[in-house]
Image (cartoon, rainbow, N blue to C red; front, side, top):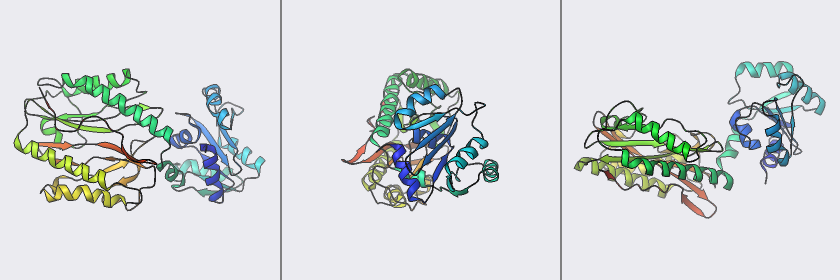
Length: 358
């Protein structure tokens, strides 16, 4: 079923005449066209219209027309509130869904003043649709993940005593882009005592003998962002470092085992957290166990202590427990796991047994 058909069906189920999409991620999801500026309308009868400007019109038409969208460049080039007003009036639309979660209040007020129809909040209806990933979406995530893994594999020989965090992080981004990532964000790349900071940033700090190095990274393919974390030891690892690493690895496996369709996010989190708490490190695992991802690096559903929603079929989540000992060291291990129609699949192939780099 095409995205346009799915969204038209949702529009009808919500009792709407049409839905208006203006948020970049939702427009991308609806049209398969990234970084679009403009507006997308989906009618309950299956008609789709994209209003965009001269910068995108040719490429957008190439991508969207085969899917059934009409792609329109309004008079004056840029889509405006008046563009939507005229369209709504011409089609007799009386109930129009809008993205209340992401639309700025000022924009909503301009629409409400101009449009001859009732504006109905969509809530999380489109976001919930995005929770169940299609094969094409998973293919993008897997491709992005393989690009990231290959880049990290190439970088491993350079992660050594005397190398600098920020220089290695920059080279990792370069290697991902060279491998086909369409964009990359600066990874979390920390060493030594800084590994106790879950979202520490790379700096011009040299790696030292006996340091842990934690790298949280991902590549991007067609807007879909992969996510992986690995922790390495450089030169040597103390007995406590090995112990903590093994606890985190066991907790991750417990989380992966618990992840299933219909399971609550808080219960999956608890399965991993119980392992860490049972080992006496519960106070040193503060963040949630994981999150979904796709067109955004952090999406619902999530595995966390406070998330009571359940995982639907085809959902994906990161499983990333950690133990962080302030001023000493930390460990995090992260994989992406998908509830595929054929069963649970770990989409992350990079080894996760403790590596001690020379």
